[in-house]
Length: 341
Image 1: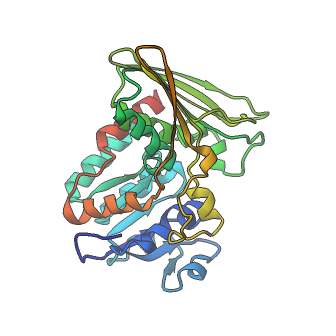
Image 2 (image 1 turned 45 degrees about the vertical axis):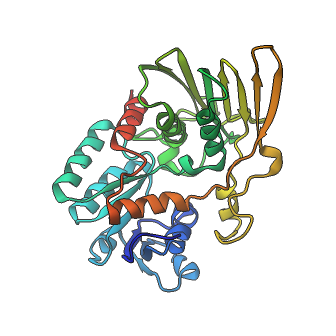
Image 3 (image 1 turned 90 degrees about the vertical axis):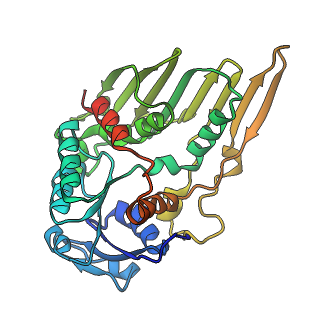
């Protein structure tokens, strides 16, 4: 991807599990403005098989002590984000932090103050803003074809009826459970479109046998002019519902969750492959509008190609050219306030 500067930023990854391997390393490697210099691998050393020139450190401290690294990607378990973000800032590093940024607004504000004090940037990894399906939703809203919106539903469903192996997701504690796992994705999408709600109401559920944490949530958010937004997620949906349902005065838009990037990266498809980021044709959205005479019109809305490389370009532009980053501190504080309420 073209960048407005020749500066190369050395980056380090705090973990090389699924998120490091799929969501970060390929993009840091593909973007000409970054050099993926190092990762932390405590047990199994696998990163060098994919990136032979990489340094694999044994601990977070070792990586943070590498003076050449300017950007630290914090992709450790949720309950460690605050601790690792603080340590990285204290070492004079810029940070890109996975969702949820922290467990509480109090922790977030403390980190913002620290970043300002040491003159470093905090950037938020909210990749679902760059999903193909969500960009189609934005396109439809911005077209004005729906007229005044009244009811909006965003869903993120899975079917996993057993307790998962990741302790930080399944044991009660800071930022655990489905709310903190998928809630940040859905809330960030809503907040990016509509801003801070006037009010909200949250319901949590525990439905899997022996679960210790929430595996269902729904949040109703009230916005000005009678716009009601609902975000819902469940781990027990066998037949997933439409992920995006929007109703306005002039029509409705229905869209399945269809972004293929995660699935493709897991399957080993490269960012340079022609199929990368392209949704299946049968997953296109349906826009139904009605005119003043009561005539209905159906339109198939195809999504643009999705690419998380745009997120890394935004990170680069923010660090090198001081351009405003799309996910703001206010966005994140709004999200955390709802999550922790």
